[in-house]
Every structure is written in C-alpha cells, then in structure tokens.
Length: 152
Image (cartoon, rainbow, N blue to C red):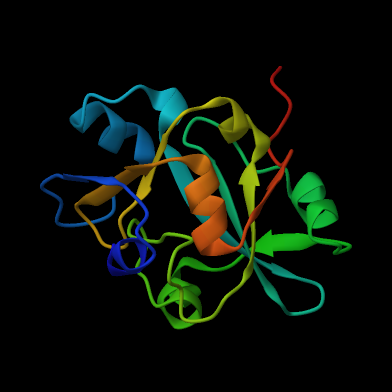
C-alpha cells in the first residue's frame, strides 16, 4: 500500500480477521465481494531457475503450460509453500505482486482486462486491496496473458 500511495495510485483497502491462511474464496465471502473480481497471486519457478508471478481469479486454476509459454519458459512449477517468504518477502495468504523482494516477471490473467477493478492481497494476512487492473500492471510491471485452465 505504501508503494501504491507513493505512485499516487488510488485503491481501497479491506481488512478482515485472520490468524492463518485461508483461501481467496473464503476471503471474498467474508468481505461480501463477488468471486469474479477477487484474484490470487501464485509464484512459480521455471526451468531456468527464475521465478515468475501469476495473478488469476480465485475460482480458476493456473494452466502451467500457458503460464510457461507466457514467460518464454519450457515449463514452470509452483514453488513450495515453505519457500514463499524466502522468494517474495510475503507469507502464504499475504502474497501480492506489488513490492516483492525482487521484481519478478508478472502476468495477470487476461480476464482482468474486462473488469473496472479487481481485489488482490494487500501484502499481509487480513488485508485486501481493490484497484484498477491497469494500475496493478503498472506497479508490478506486469502484462496480461491467457494463463488459466480452459473451463470444462
């Protein structure tokens, strides 16, 4: 949020009671927000040993093949939960594409292009932020990509 304020990017913060990780669907329900606008942040490692960040709707699954292709890798895999803090500086459930320890290549699912605003983690448990998808791209230096599993 300090980064957003510094960049003069408007956002709305939501807070909720949370002692440990809960999934995005439960958070959306706690905040009475539609699932379609709440996104989760996932971190992967490519064959190159580089890390990549993907932001997708909470009800969707990351398509690892599409994700890899979007960042020019042969393959990517999810990093172990125990490595999230070491790689990002955040903890599970509080991970956001904004302000990680290092600037990683970031892709936001193309579904966000059609939304006026999305909600992502505020960088810690109990905090969510609502902002324009374009502002998330700007501050995370991300790009849109089709990175979720096709609906059955």
